[in-house]
Amino acid sequence: MFKQYLEKQITLHPSMRPQDVIKLCFQAAFGAEHLLGDMARVKDFFDAEFLQVDERDGLVVERIADDVCRINLAVWKKRGFCKELLFDLFVQSAQVQMNGGEARFWDYVSQAEGMPFSDEEWQGFVAEYKRGGVRAVHHSEIYREREKPAYRVVSGEYIERIICIVENKGEMLK
Image (cartoon, rainbow, N blue to C red; front, side, top):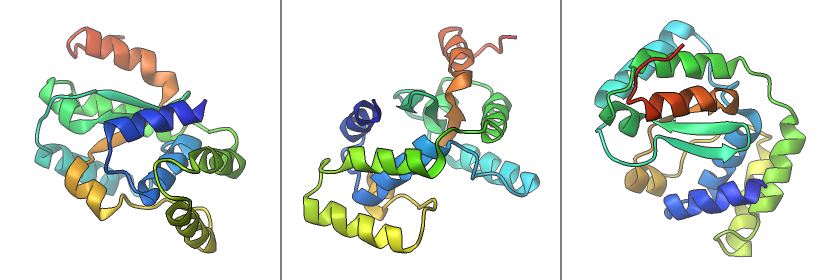
């Protein structure tokens, strides 16, 4: 099933490199749980990024697994949705315990083999990655330049709430 999400991401973001695929696999397997530390710092970073991101059209929600999605800050902002609500969904998502951990991650990595890179390029990156242990990575430079990623990883358990927000033009629903 994950392969379908990966294929969709490659279609939406054609500048993906092996590093970006590993990042996607990590986020799909672990959700947002690795992203919180000092809450004041996390909030300040979120506020600064939200302020700086240029509004654009596109998909608000991109599913990256059955139970994980990325919420595009630029589209969220353009649609006039509540910044605080998105931050709250992100924080709540970071507290959701994901199932499968490393086994899930490596299953996703195995499903990514051969897409859309040469075996040599993919296997080389995966071998290098393995030497450092399972960890979050940043997007590749080319991905950052071309895709301008600005999103928050949110648990799929909140997807219905997000859909209600999108369909109701950003009104907070209880």
